[in-house]
Length: 216
Image (cartoon, rainbow, N blue to C red; front, top):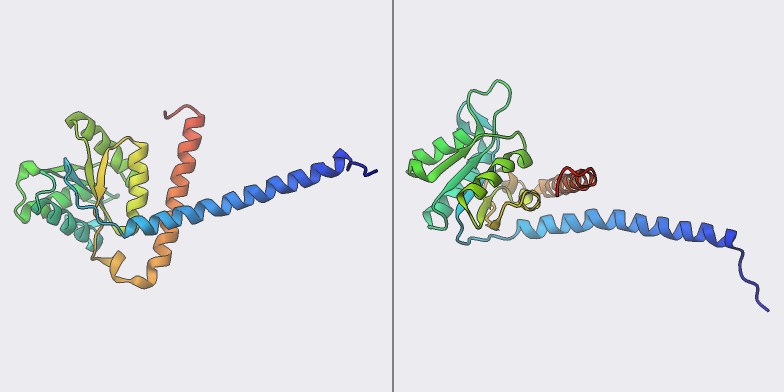
């Protein structure tokens, strides 16, 4: 007659099994996020929307840097196609700056013929999430059903994830196809790793905030 293994022997096996499952989950999540970063980077959703929202990037004394200029060129193309009646530029300033990323973007668009009433500068925020907070409020105030996001290809998935957290309605995203983030293919892996980490950190913060009752 076969004897059953004592419970004290089965317990370590159960713990070991749970540890293996946890390890697999920890490894699978970053892999899944990295895959989504790459997948979303390859999509260009040029769809009608209430507004084009341009994510901010570095500017120098009112002149957009190469990254920001590539984003503005993409936004201008979408506006000229008639996909949205308004372009929203975003981004605050760094210490010592005389202007903001949003204002520099707005000036760039005005210089290229976009009417003043068609460009809204939301000059707040030092990072992606903080920049999207006032945009979400603007969308609610204006009753927008969907915006068209513009950023670098690798940055789009993190931007969409944060927009979802803020209940900012997104109709689609149209990433840049020029500029530093697309010209240097040798840095693709580093971009994907950085954005994967950014998404995971954001999701962890959301979980912690919900646990503390700070967000719904």
